[in-house]
Image (cartoon, rainbow, N blue to C red; front, side, top):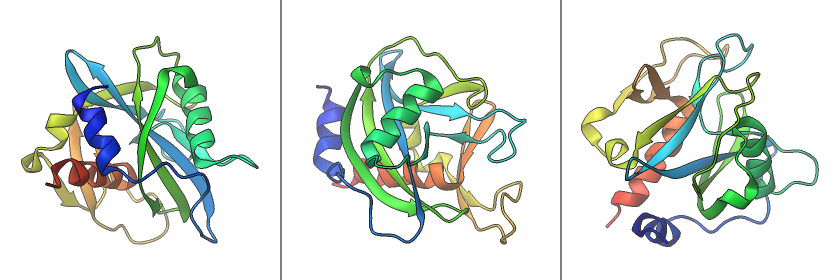
Length: 188
């Protein structure tokens, strides 16, 4: 187990066996921690630009709950469907508090170590993946709080954290989850 995995196991919430109480629909995402170039990094999926919803957005692999699934089962299924990561390559470390999305879905975020595997992207759902070193994401000077560049729903745009990732921007719900993770890592 890496030092980061040990720290995350201590600081994250326990892995839920069931969904949080909510009248909203449920979804789950997997926040994959990978070792790349000798550093711990988070893996993000970039959605294709031609999608009706979430076009071009950067997020974690994830999606809506299928009937009878737990949050873990949903996150693992979606991760395998979207980026081809088999469940045997995923080690759950913990969870972050669930958050309501701008489209009124209660989203659970499970944090896991993803072992090195050949990724097979589902082109209808993921155009490419991006990586960001955890150390960079912990650098407060790289974050900005602002409204999104585009409105994603009919509601007024609310400010969210923004973080530049090479040629893309991390913002919205995924950025909020990353900020929650960073807060857990820097909580001494």
